[in-house]
Length: 244
Image 1 (tube, helix red, strand yellow):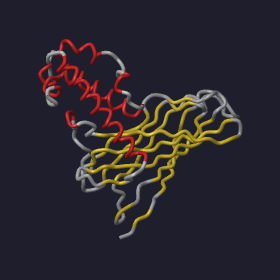
Image 2 (spheres, rainbow, N blue to C red; image 1 turned 45 degrees about the horizontal axis):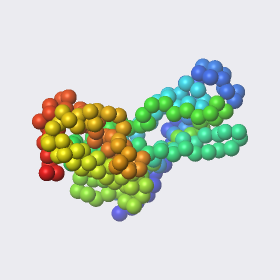
Image 3 (cartoon, one colour; image 1 turned 90 degrees about the vertical axis):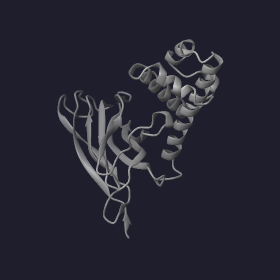
Image 4 (cartoon, rainbow, N blue to C red; image 1 turned 135 degrees about the vertical axis):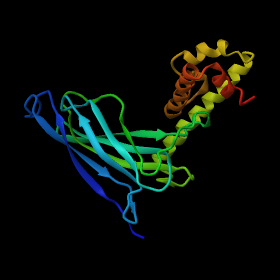
């Protein structure tokens, strides 16, 4: 059985609308996207990053960026974390800005969703535009699969930052749910009493969550509100009563 790393270089045509560093206004340029694929197993990359696409309106701005994850394995995938690194120049020096894009269909047991099934694919990417100071020129984007959790609890990339992030988000969701269930119980199981708390933007500081945990708590809060709109109060209260 052979394992190897496959690096794919994709050239993406990006429209630049601002003249900078000798680039004429409106002239199309190319941003290089380097995809560091996960190790192949018996010639097959289990979770493959394909079809990156970027749109930029200025040399220092990435307006849209997306790519597709394809599950070539024979197991459903519950969670992934992709490391996205934007390499750019500023004042003649090269820098890197990294962030993680994640997918977790099991961020909390109350709202488990369908995993990424074998031979299926899904779109991922950065939400919203990313921009830097005016002198910056984006030179290259690198994508790497950092972590993947399968339905049978086996994983790729265990012990890394991607796994830590997924776990922290899940912990934040659970801690918020526990706190909210406690507020519900103290209010005499009155959803109407605590609804303003759920609807209020942000997570209470009393929970003392870090930034990653706060993302999980906020996701739970927003999902709970969506459940209220689409399924009704009874479904929401069934989740809050589970801790009693």
